[in-house]
Length: 279
Image (tube, rainbow, N blue to C red; front, side, top):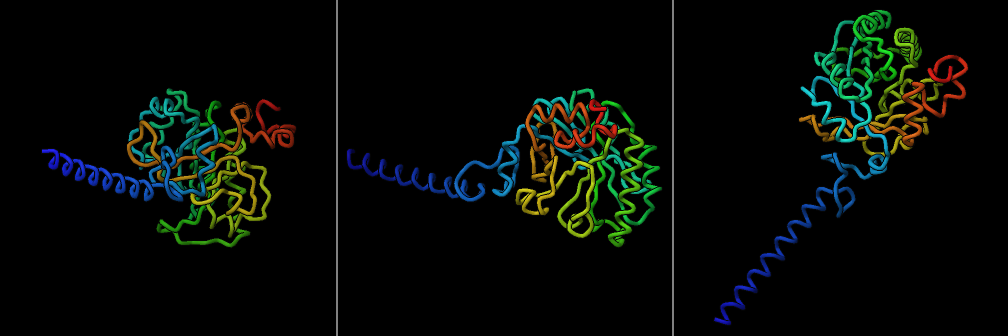
């Protein structure tokens, strides 16, 4: 019997060791750069954006793909803001926009709408559509102009840089007139390189960079918001969702909520009347 007991103990020890090795290998496979926990709330973390998780003001952006959202759970999960798809082109509105617009407000989640710019319709048509469909609520965040090449749509038109900048400015002016707030510019690496790089805008920038910090991809373009993953998980939303971070502290965020401007730009923009509490 003692011999049998020793044999069983030896087998058990080898089994436990094997299970420990399997668990260790699995942890390495899940984690950026080796052993460690994945970034909370991200199913496919990248070590290049690890700093984003430590920024105090976190938020999301949503569209119809996220389905029905429990906004109270989103707020309780620590999300401080949401940008939601409103309009696209000259005749499309996200089918979940109004439900999201109302739901986020009722739950106390600051929200703003974005317009996805297309290059196969006139900027004036898109401006009229945005004005017709997106409420100019005084408590909303500034609107967002989403600037990308339309690679995943039937529109394959690529205007010249000069033409694109003219359309962009028309749209920005129209959105500002409609809402009374200086719009935010959202963009990705390719569009920024082709059209926006080196161009001055007074607008805050929201930059997509899911594998590195924004300054590494956008030639030190100052940013206010950073979209750091598209594989996020947030309570109240079943599918994966884009997660974003605000650049600054909680005090900076309060200034942004009060003025609609990046706190670093309030001194320059306030006298022109573009920052609400600084007028």
